[in-house]
Amino acid sequence: MTGFHAGVGGGSSSARARTRLEDHPVYVVLPGKVQAVLTETARRHPLEAGDSPPDDALYFVLNGALGFFPSGQRVCVGVIPPGSVLGWEAAVGATIHTHETRAILPTEGYVAPLKPVHALLKDAWIHQFLAAYAASRARALGIEAACNAQHTAVQRLAKWIARLHAADGEESGISIAQGKLADMLGLQRTSVNAACRHLQDRRAVRIRRARLVVLDHDELSRAACDCDAGQADDVLERRLRARLN
Image (cartoon, rainbow, N blue to C red; front, side, top):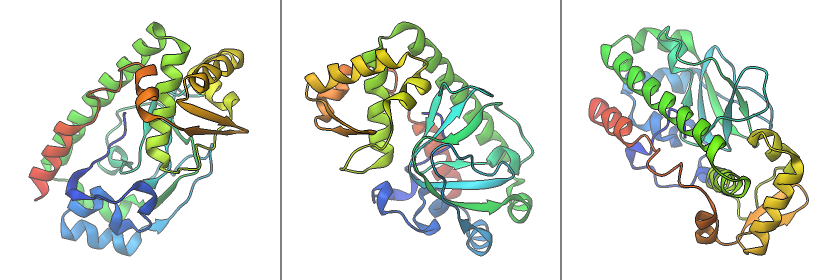
């Protein structure tokens, strides 16, 4: 995971239950003066798969999933889950990555222009927090690169299906074609088709047309590599909560 996200603030509702900016777990723990500006200026901004959020605004992800893509490529090097906020770097005049951000699944979120919040984010703590976030993101991207080099198609596919299922939250399944998964993983479509059949034979997933349904989370976890273990930004989240509360 490489999104600037948080389970902070005790938000216990599922991603799909979030429909308002006020439901976002990062919004909940921001200072009141920042909340007031965001409530006044933010607007709902859904993204279809393949769309990019504005690069000159904050984007609060409520549900769905976005990904980081090296410029001009289709391979995805990290997932951005619900509860993330994009654009903090631009808000404080920092640049910490050169990847494109695009929706992997249909995504719901709120977009807020930078100018109204820029003056409110000049405290030293936000710069320190972003520095820690940059280090966390670099580490996660390094782990993803190592995973791509070391693990099998089945392991990598199972990991990504688990990621997308967690982000999507729909019992009806993940709406994504196997060809799209092949592009994201940098694999041949035949390899992804074979890996999908293997996971279906293990009764971890059921394959439908342009849709994957997770049947057994434990079996899917056993099939996946363990690269996501310990990748949640727990330390960053504790720092954010401690600084804002």
